[in-house]
Amino acid sequence: MSQMPQQAAPAKCPSCAEPVEPGDFFCGACGYDLSVVPAPPQDHPTLTMTGSAGEGPEGVAWPAPEPEGSAAPPAVHLPTDLPGTDAGGEPLHDREPAPAAASGTDLEGHEPGAEEPRRPAGSGVRFDRPEEPEEYSLQAPDPRVAGTPGNPEHHAVPQEPAPLCVACRAGRVDSDGYCENCGHAQPRERDHMEQESGPVAAVSDRGLRHHRNEDAFTVGHTALPDGTPAALAVVCDGVSSATRPDDASTAASQAAGDTLLAALPRGTHPQTAMHEAIVAAAQAVNALAEEPATAREHAPHQNAPACTIVGTIVASGLLVVGWVGDSRVYWVPDDRTAPAARLTEDDSWAAQMVAAGLMSEAEAYADERAHAITGWLGADAYELEPHTASFKPDRSGVVVVCTDGLWNYAETAEEMAEAIPRDAAERPLHSARVLVGHALDGGGHDNVTVAVVPFPTPPQGAGSA
Image 1 (cartoon, rainbow, N blue to C red):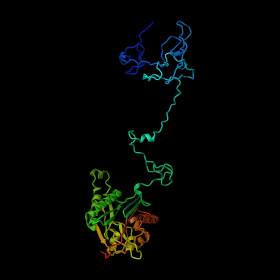
Image 2 (cartoon, helix red, strand yellow; image 1 turned 60 degrees about the vertical axis):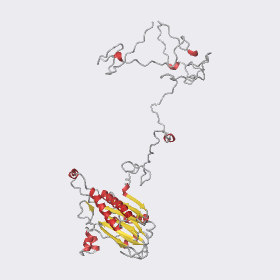
Image 3 (cartoon, rainbow, N blue to C red; image 1 turned 180 degrees about the horizontal axis):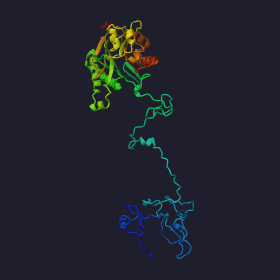
Image 4 (cartoon, rainbow, N blue to C red; image 1 turned 90 degrees about the vertical axis):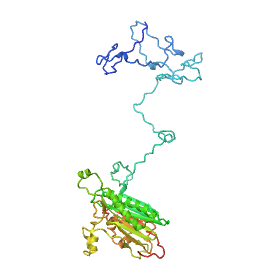
């Protein structure tokens, strides 16, 4: 007896997911109308189910149905019991191919060579597929394809490899700055800095005792309006007892360097430009103290950022220096038979004692108060008094600009001349490295920063200023 196909009731209510019985028109839990549930999609069997019993299309032998009323239970037929073909028309299970139909069509009713029509969704399922793995290994993308224009990923920036440990040279460095292999803490970028600019070079190092580098420097070169070359160097030492000394030294050195590089090409006299640079550096450090009042309420112990500054300009046979604090400038001639000289005076307790005649230099610098500075850049400085001076050396040499992290181990001009290589004018970066190494070998108790500026042979007739 033929029956109209009836819509099978869902196993669960689409609204509340409660189980429902076949034939229910409403959910017993929430009252959802089950008659509005859409009918399931039409089934698309793999094999065409037409033809008489026992014979399928193109000779496929279908199992005969059991006679009605038979007491024996119906035989169970699995899909793998039935022969079939793959998408290319080849027989499955290594069976002999069925004889071709006289009409010249294949099992799907297509003429050989004719374009295969689009198959409906769900058709063409193979029964002999191997078991699929639980996990699939993802194939790495082909870099040749990823880098081709038109590919959405061809603009992606390649990821840089993780840096190697500076200690063991084998382990990778994690995001915290430690080696994953030996656990060695890696140096931060500011722990050791080197830079060259034209004839000038500078090196800064954290030292062996401090937890961070609070020094900063700027080196550069430019030209005067007449085309004469000019070289400059600025070195700043953060005051450790102040708040954010590393930020103070960075701001001061950058502001001073930018001012000099802008003023010298305009024709500003180098000594005037140096004065303007120190004032600009002081303003930059003062700006760091401009913070909301609430910040001081939460941290009342903090004070204003502060640093010292020292710089030099070499241009047209003129040597200009400027400073506030206890960082120094030394003059070392290429002819080591000529005397070297210190070109700056410290703004420090020891220097005041010596200037007042109260103590000898040896006694003053042996005192524990020797390095207490009396001048610095910062919002809480007593008064800004930039010191500047100009010189006209009568011979070639090098200018050494440094913090006390170096001159603590080469205090006198003679000691500095002994520490710096004799070819410093030709190899300023190498010489700066040697001087930093000299301080580290001596103990490295402080941050060490030094810039080396060659002073070329002056024009004939130049004298001291």
